[in-house]
Amino acid sequence: MAFQISNRKYYVLTGIVILTCLITLTLTVSFIVSKTKDISIENPNHSISSPAKPVWKWQCEKNSCQKRRITDQDNDLAILSLPACRYFCSTSAGIWPIPTGEVSVGDRLIKVNYYSIDVVSNTSDTPINALVQEAIKEFKNDIKSSITSGINPGGLSVVVSLGISDTTTNRLTLDTPEGYSLKISDPGSSSIKVDIQAGTFFGARNGLQTLTQLIIYDNIRNEVQMPNSASITDKPAFAHRGIVLDTSRNFITTSALKRTIKAMGASKLNTFHWHLTDTHSFPYESASLPELHRIGAYDPSKVYTRQDVKDLVEYARVRGVKVVPEFDAPAHVGEGWQDTGYLVCLNAQPWQIYCVEPPCGQFDPTKEGLYDAIEDLYGDMLEQFEPDVFHMGGDEVTFKCWENTTSIVEWMRAKGWGTTDRDFVKLWNHFQSNALERLYKKAGREIPAIMWTSHLTTPEYLVESLPKDKYYIQVWSESDDDQIKQLLDNGYKIILSNSDALYMDCGFGSWVATGNNWCSPYIGWQKVYENNPSKIAGDKVHQVLGAEAALWTEQADSSSVDGRLWPRAAAMAEVLWSNASTGWEAAEHRFLAHRERLVLMGIDADAIEPEWCRQNEENCRTGSRFNV
Ligand SMILES: *[C@@H]1O[C@H](CO)[C@@H](O)[C@H](O)[C@H]1NC(C)=O
Ligand SMILES: *[C@@H]1O[C@H](CO)[C@@H](O)[C@H](O)[C@H]1NC(C)=O
Ligand SMILES: *[C@@H]1O[C@H](CO)[C@@H](O)[C@H](O)[C@H]1NC(C)=O
Ligand SMILES: *[C@@H]1O[C@H](CO)[C@@H](O)[C@H](O)[C@H]1NC(C)=O
Image (cartoon, rainbow, N blue to C red):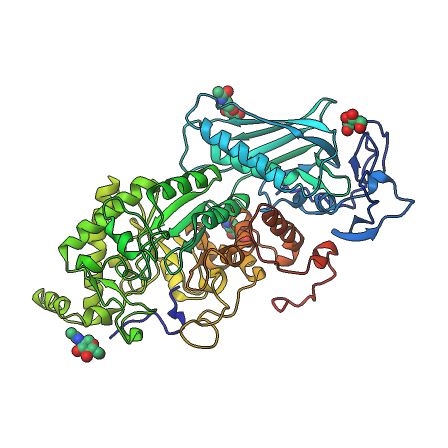
């Protein structure tokens, strides 16, 4: 009768203007230099003044950048750095994720004065101004991070104007408009003018993020350059674009969490789903129940204090990311709850009988006091995170644990229940409906709750257990699981974390035996990129709120979290932002460039190819799909 999800699943869970570089450019008038017949770098002082004469340049050939020797015959103006070549040679000027509206960009790059880039906003004296000012600081930091050598003096100054119409929205929700328009006007002789217009702060921040990517560093001339003109309109296809990160199996430091959130902002992901607690440790400082982290943290230093949480929520907000807390229950609880009397099966052995992963632990739904405790916890989380949705977890309950607890079975008998699967579902629903009531009580409204796919989301129990007007379902089963179709047919809104494409912890060694871990092999970025929700949901794709890449941290901590998530999560980011339906091949060069951008920002993103392949595009791929 014991229910286990399955043995395998054992461990949890455009009018785009294509800028071909082959554009035959009309004669381009530049400042001093009168005419060039090729795409060019505008460099009034006409000099490549590196200490040592550069050897290599990049040339756009057949939509790819090719590394070529610089010869004496080369016109200085036609010598392109790799980032400049990427700008001219890519679809949509190399922007990641690719914009969904118009993208037209100019055919010249102009040297700008890095020390004279100003951003002005029409939000002074409004409630969002502090947020805007922080985002401007971040924008300047991001440009700085791309500068890998010195900067030669000179160049035009830049003035960026932000126009934001809604000056009160400072919290991102599923309904917040995140679109923007960006215009770069051909400068006179004084300064380059950039105009970003957006409905909300979050849209404007996305506009700044795109602008960051249009401002490139030319490492041949050691100067910062940007396009002479641009007109871009952009908004996301999916509202929920996230990462779920587990900080219980292993503790992740706040600085590592910030790196993840920074990379999310740089990739226009907007939801950090924080799987704060689990059976293994309880690192969250609850103001109401301080004994939980005192007993449950791995170490007093491995705690997210109230101040840490406050800082993280604010740090994320500046980067266009909302933090959604998860309190997973009634399973996935353990350390921290020992003294409460609400816990059963803690570290029960042999664990395979009582849970899906050691150590075991489940709440006892028959204890009335339990609901008061979780109400307090919900209250703390709602107050600190102010989320528009709340994640209640709800996965991998093992009935055998409850069945093995005499008092629980007696409580069920007294109600006239038996001990069949259906009876344990009743017990689970008793927990879930009580917990939901306490969540609503603290939220002061019927806040939408998210639940993982589980026994409750199977066709037999779904509709009676989790009404679709109250719950969104996060799917962790594989993309071909019938349950997805059934959820959609029943009218549910879903979030995809299908483990065959979005589980970033797959493909490492097992930790309970030898061999590979449960969801091996490793999922390459190509597969992540081609996991388009439309392929999974078909004509019901409008019921897909979005997706989340998942990192369960049994085998990752602060020292490996960057490499596990990045750059793969950025591949998902483009799919969700742009609804990209092309194969990964078309995205590869831009993806490699984005990975480089993340590394320069301080994210330890994994290398995915030898740098040689990035410098010599189209020379490495075999043409066979998913074997590279
Ligand atoms: C050209 O070089 C001179 C001297 O180095 C400098 O003062 C001037 O600002 C430069 N002009 C531009 C547009 O870079
Ligand atoms: C700021 O710019 C937005 C977008 O152009 C505009 O709708 C809004 O009226 C402007 N606000 C102020 C105070 O000028
Ligand atoms: C994504 O594209 C598919 C076609 O490939 C289309 O059916 C779907 O409506 C699009 N979804 C969104 C959210 O734009
Ligand atoms: C719990 O399971 C163990 C091992 O299967 C068994 O020996 C024990 O009797 C069970 N206890 C209850 C109360 O069911």
